[in-house]
Image 1 (cartoon, rainbow, N blue to C red):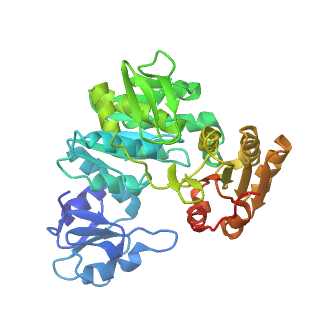
Image 2 (image 1 turned 30 degrees about the vertical axis):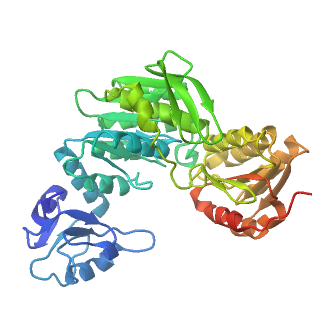
Image 3 (image 1 turned 90 degrees about the vertical axis):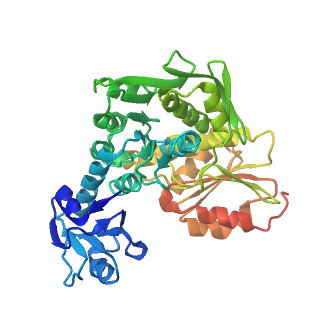
Length: 459
């Protein structure tokens, strides 16, 4: 990006103090990470107020800051743009820069699979195009604008992710990103606290189409979800569907989910997916829908897929001398928890005991208790040998599992810390242990503990 402080003031509707011609080639919201040419964007967060650091940035060598409060000192050659809402201003600048880019923009949302599909697409498309993608889960009203503003001018494919936990957020983000292709990976019972019903979630996810731009724009949806099909039908935009086992626009067949990899067929081409679990086959088919829309051939897609790599804390298989750990603890909702349980089922013939370390699922509103009971029942029904549930409602999950099966050993813990302190009591050599829970549970601590355990042999 290339702007001057004066241009930023004009785009954001801010008031300029200082040098209008001060050049800006990047944006940073972290006062400790402002580099030469960066504009420090002062955002008030839960723990810190960026406005408190604006003066130190520009007096310490920074050339530009956007803030809601004007610092007392503005050195010669520096500038400050005063705005009433720095987050809204960030969106305005990102929207302007999006209009200057020639790249195709791919926008992705969904209750499950959006980050994994985004990363999969990034790995695939970067083998053919100059590609830029969101970092980590940069999918909100701060992360998405930053992703756009970090995009090189010569980028050919820009992949952005859009998340939401309240109505209207996706529409706001998509009108900034203005995607040429919008993908909805899935709609499930996630963030019910903010939406109240699966129908409201579907409408929110489908609203990604409201920002579609370009003569060849397209909304791609998951065909397996009628509630999503219904929501999309109300938007009057070009729409296509992907799915297994049907006559869909982007159809896959013969899906085979394995312990470390899987495969499926598109046309006459079998695509091998070097990632674990059925969920990643669905993510790969969603990625194919996008790539096919861009004109990619199935054989090329299959070849590029071989260079896709798993993301940290998403179905990472860790082999220790004593146990197998499957770390899938970046986040959790009912659908992704069921995917985890299904994956454990694949290990029945090749592993010792099947152990499910299940954390709390957040933001489920009035359905929280019911869905945690359902989780426990699903774990028991799948034939898991040991359930270790942690966090709020762990006892609800465990009680439901015990009611379903008297063969399943199940124990509850109030916190991740309590769970970690007692793992050695329950885990034995030969166990396959899958760890999954909401981000707030920080279950990566349990993974680290498991890797260091000195284990006893099963008696």
